[in-house]
Structures are given as structure tokens and as C-alpha cells.
Amino acid sequence: QAAYLEPDVIYADVVNQGLLRSDDGGMTWQTKPSLTTSPNGNNNWAGRLFIAISPTDANTIYACLQNGTWSSDFGKIFKSIDGGDSWENWTSGLTEYTKGFVVQPDENGQDIVYLFTNARDRKSKVFVRRADSQEWEDCSTGFPSGFHVNLALPFYRDSKLRVSGNGGIWQSPLLTSNYTPIINPWVEKANYNCISDSVYFEDHSIINHEDAYWRWEITPTPEYISDENIRNPVVVLGNEGSYDVTMYVTKEGQEYSK
Image (tube, rainbow, N blue to C red; front, side, top):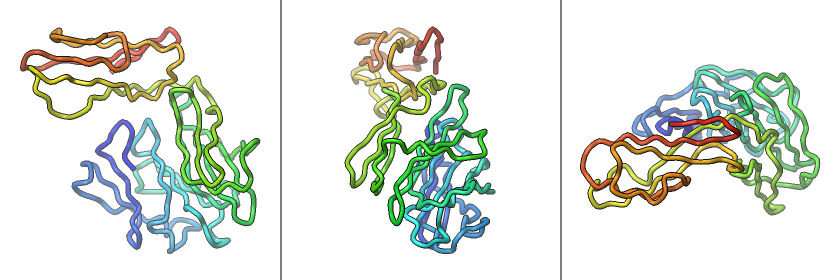
């Protein structure tokens, strides 16, 4: 999995090797201390972990076993704030067959972590925990009890949490829709012919789109821009050279930019 704001940072969990990290987009890799030697870890874990990265910090990661089989695997959850060099046991008493996480920012830019479990000899559940909390909160109301989860993802445009599995696709509101936006303008490819190519800009920010307003500023002025006040303008720069591009997003009266 690649980090949100630092896409060159990638984590991979490899069978018989454990956790690896790359800081250069996968060109080179470093082995990280194995979770199999962490408190209550298991030698069978290497290559079977679900890794989730904080959207605000590439060094903060969460790990759990996917589809635990033995009682020794129940509820094992770990957190690292130094890129996997050391680990804190974040289990806090859970005894569930863990599956995976979703991590969203809260109104202060801190992590909210959702944990999804699979049904085996017990009900499937969803738990939530804030970064500054000591306990997991059960938020399984309305969640299908026999669900074998495939994948859960945040849908920030509408502030929804979506999960798929053997019971279809389900959604629920995120714990808070008033989270701190994380601004991330994006362009289709790395290289363009400045004179003739159409440049397709896009916004991949973590932000609720309701009552959000966009504005793009390009210096020097390009030859053509479809609309500077939309989320995804098309631009023809018109001349070779260096251009400064800034995307502004206004949300609830506050302006964010990158």
C-alpha cells in the first residue's frame, strides 16, 4: 500500500519475509522489524497482514491479521508511529477475527480507525477507535452479522464508509463528516507537450464535496483553461516554460490550498 500524501512510500507484507518499506516508489526496499516477534505475534503472520497507513503521516501505520484461523490470532492489532521500526499493541482486549481497516482524519487532523471483522464462529462486527482513545467502540448496529468482508473503503465525497463482501455492498456515514480536509491536486501524467497537449487537472483531496468550492490559479496565464472554478479543469499551457499551479478549495468558509 502507498501512502496518501507521499506516494513514493510503499509498504508490502511478503510471505516468509514480513514487512518491507520502500521510500522511492518501489525501486529499493528495507526490511522492518517483524510483527511475528511482537507481543502475542505469530510466526505464521508474515505475508498475511492487512496494513493501513494514516492519511496524514506515512510513518503511522496499523496492522492486523487477515482471516485469523487459530484462537491465538484473535483480535491482534498493532500500531507503529515510526514507519514499522517499533510497534505498540493496539488490541485492547478484542477477541475477533480481524480483517482490515479504514483510516480517516477527524476534525483535528488525527486518525479515526475503523476495524472490520469476519464472521467465523461469531458475528461479524465493526469497531472504531480514535488516535487518543484507549478502547475500541463497537459500532456494528445494522451491520450484517454473517458478513465475510472483502474490502472496506472511505468515500470522502459523500462522507461515507463502504464495505463489500459475501453480503453485497453496504455503506454507513463516516463517524464525522467535519474532518480536516487534506488537499491533493493531481494531474494525469508526468510529462506534457506544453504547446499542444491538453492537461487534465483533477482533485484527489480528502474532502466532503457538499458546499465545497474550487479555484485554480496558474502562473503565467495559460493559453486556455476550460473553467478555473471547477474541480477538474482542462488546460492548454500554450508555451514551453515553468508554470506554478495552485488549487484552492473553500469549505465552510475556510480556504485550503496546495
